[in-house]
Length: 97
Image 1 (tube, rainbow, N blue to C red):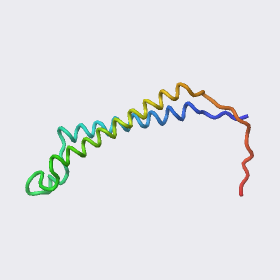
Image 2: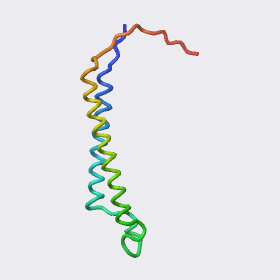
Image 3: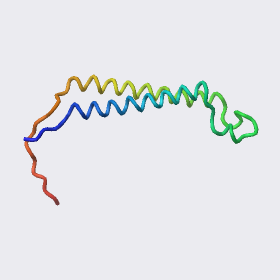
Image 4: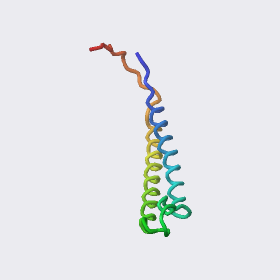
């Protein structure tokens, strides 16, 4: 019999989603209130190439994406509580073709 970790896979993926969601959320909040597009550095007048409305739309997308990632992480953590730590199954023959 071989043991396969089941809960650990869910916890690792949940942590990855959570950290990624935090990172993207902080970037979205930064873009919404402090940051500006890189095009502003190269244009003669600020907000010529990218309007403020377009920039707020982009930062809103980042915030919504981060919320979805964090919610996915929370659901994975919740689902991991219901899964067993290990699953035992018979060792399968692994033949090469």
